[in-house]
Length: 108
Image (cartoon, rainbow, N blue to C red; front, side):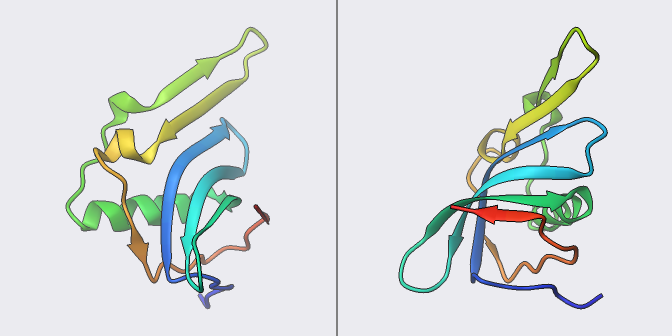
């Protein structure tokens, strides 16, 4: 599959949040490329999130599931939220990661 876009050289994901059953994940990120880093939120697919996690695991980091927060509400809604620093033990910089699916939203 062809790359959709690339506006950065390095991607640092700080935190991920999504509702169970939703098609998209909201990620708080820092994009490095150009003159200064850009702090933003990206709505990406679970597929791209899984690709990011797999790439980090391939670098030798272990995903610690016990550090993932699950919030359950009375109406049955479940929210999953975790900081990458907590689940991998440190902040991770991904170089040359290209999203394969359309980004739903990107904002500063």
